[in-house]
Length: 359
Image (cartoon, rainbow, N blue to C red):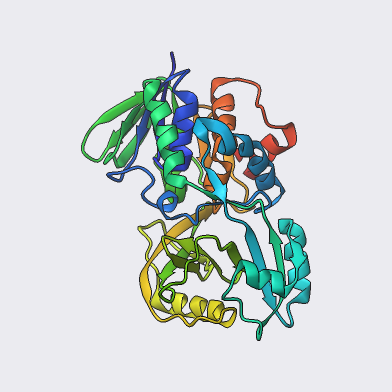
């Protein structure tokens, strides 16, 4: 049985572990003290089938059945609405078509989202089948499956060195522990290029971008539980219900170095101001704020497959804002390729995800 070391315990790494563990001896190394600490722990937690480019949409479609049914499913009804003010008709039409939304009347929009500001919003579009995705449950389902098949999941295992000698990979953590494997899976998220360089391989240009969130209070007695996910045209902001309040994102995308990200006050203020224009209820109190990293390859598609120069080093990176949506299909593809099986995905999608496209 081959030995596989997975570096990274976000949704990419833990889903890969679940797929590989029935067929190999898997060790997953996560630098933090818990799984899904960075980007995976700070997701907006939605399943939007039409979100992303054509390659991402193919992965979304291939992941839908798993999200709906595996382990009882992780989806629940939410709905998605997009709103636009005057002067944004072209962008509204384009975004609606891309996301598969149908224009609705402002009366219907206000019924779905009672805080809609009719003085500023003149267009709305909606689709009912956008859903909340229980990200914690999905992580736990994958982790449980991985452990049930013998995977060793090691947290607090920050990688310090990666070497390969006589066909064996040796991954040494900063506390001196050495893990040996026949294959390495790079699922390190924002640190994916760093891990590749540690292994003596060429980085792919995976860039982390900061995305911020604020949780804001609503007036007493106002319950947002049944409100949709709402997106400003051009993804200028978005919001969704969260534990009796709203989470609002400025939809910022600022390039940063890999880090434990935090939100900047000015970015939050500007985003909340854009949100405020669309609603009737003033933003009076911010309950909490945070930020995460969305890491993209240059073409904004995931990177899944063997490195161009080293066939025993596999990439599972570049998830951007699509990691949870695409995890079932992405991890299955990673496992198919690593185990030498014929991929379940179509050939064009597999090629579009191949790291060799950057060679």
